[in-house]
Image 1 (cartoon, rainbow, N blue to C red):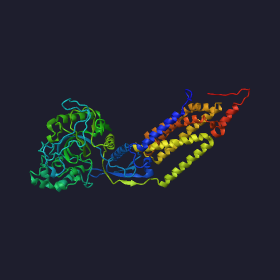
Image 2: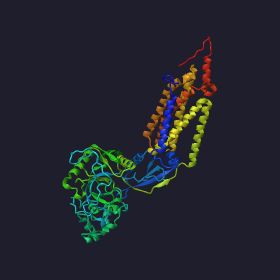
Image 3: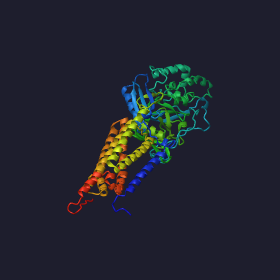
Image 4: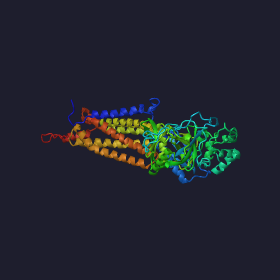
Length: 633
């Protein structure tokens, strides 16, 4: 028999709750990131104070080894903190130590912290020349080999079509392919032979009190005046087969370390074959950060590129995000430029498209005969697409990106480059600040407290105590599943502060029980039957329950926004548990009370826990004038 129109159907709410549990735990066991055995998939991420983690020290390196400014060190700490927090709610600790160190501590053993301390200096530079970076053996190019850029992004029209293509520069990994070593002598650019070395903030192997100029003089002395003069006179990549004596003259450059290579002029780095991509890629961070100088960088570990001055920088990027390119199904980094940055980017693409002043050498052009623009991050070329039109909108960086690496690069660009260059020290695994015994003792105390609450609930509310017990169990299971899933998806880690937040949320849940049950007793005392009192009590208690939970949620949000570290974890846990408690209130507590109200046990004062309320109603309903007063809703 169908219930009367307008009457609640508790089965529907319970079915929705069951569906939520089913979907949640399907995601826990089978969603992306679920690995290992069934028990491993049910493990939440725990914080530093519960399981320990990984600690890495970053040491600031300056040109002459002097102590960096305290303001720059603090700015770097804030940027690194933002980068780490951008990975998720991981409750990482980023603190300064002494006058030149920043210490990063994150939960989990052997965590990868290598990227958080990179300068993340983004430069867009036009590719002027290319040469083989594999060494002197490969100086002769294969017949017909020329470097080529990858096509422009989706949405960029063919150059013959429109001069104003739609935005979006994309390129395939390793664009620029081909080996250009030993190509015919390219036309030198005006500053190629006299380019100054790119200054850097890292002294590398130099003593702390030695400046870059002193290091450059030491390198010149090390290779000898004859080798230095021969290298400075080069106008094209050295061809040892045409001049065997030149190989002997330039041999001293083969003994230079990457730290010494970094101070060489750009033309020497590019034209001397013994300065390979292996050495160029190992130069200290910041070696080519000077935007006003031409520099040399490698692509794919084999192709050396002489790059023009940087006309668009990372500071011209307003926002960056890792997204999936719908046309190629590859992860890319989408860039939104600032107002001035967009103008600079448009001018750069126009210059590259038209090959203004014929700066780009023939061997460095792409398949369509247009200049390529290299996307340079620190010392590495991420991609170098051929510009096939003047781009007037936002663009993309493409490469061999995964979702994690695309989001990592976007995070670095979004939060800005570090004001200092850091030398990462060896990462160390650290033990939990709270021992296992202390954790067990805390959980035991929490269990005893919960047991006392349940005993009191059954003693005071009898049958209604089972509603409290089942609600708390369901809330706990729901919260646990959410913890596991959030830890896997956004990096949420459970710390002692988070546990405290969940315990505090139990007080909010208990308040809602008291409000509902006491309102139910009031309705029964006024003469209504338990069955009619349940919906009336719910209608009146619901507003109070929602208001109380809303206040807790707003307090948690405000606390999360204005706090850092473990306090944020407390606020996040409190807000999460309160939201899930509301789900249980609406989809379980009220429906199950409606079902209980239809049972004979609910009418028994001793069983239901409504004894005094029912007895008071019966006394009021006793016949006094020959009539029985019955008050119904």
